[in-house]
Length: 176
Image (cartoon, rainbow, N blue to C red):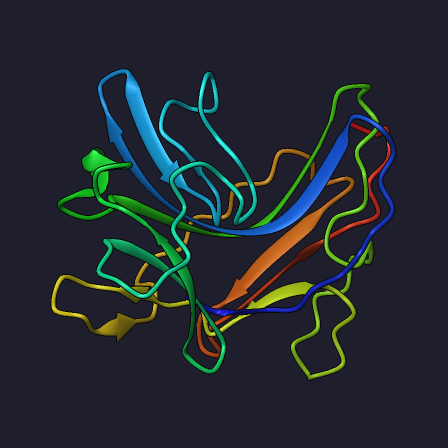
């Protein structure tokens, strides 16, 4: 969980950019991931990025992996039968941004800016108060954070542990 700001950076055909939160379980050759959408096989044969995905249920009933918006508004859930590998919990939780392009020219991520300010005037993509739910239903701040950035010339990501605030973004381009 966490509060994301939402930007609408311009993208071209065959480009993708997002702010994401994902829970993941890895076992041998199988990776199961929910990314406010889902894929159970590394997006090889299954996967979808919106609430119209097969298997996503938008009714009030019990389910294992709920999507809840600010104000405790329940949007829907992924049943445990859809993602059985996550039955005992996720081994990995991810928050951040992602940008991808087939032509090698990366699209903007976040707002398209590289600012790393947490003074309330940030023009960057951010996740405020990222937390995860443990097996006892406690909302906890991450104890350890791993920054994974493929192209530091185009994008920036930084986690401020004391403020529990993650900033990410950048203009994109063809530098990498």
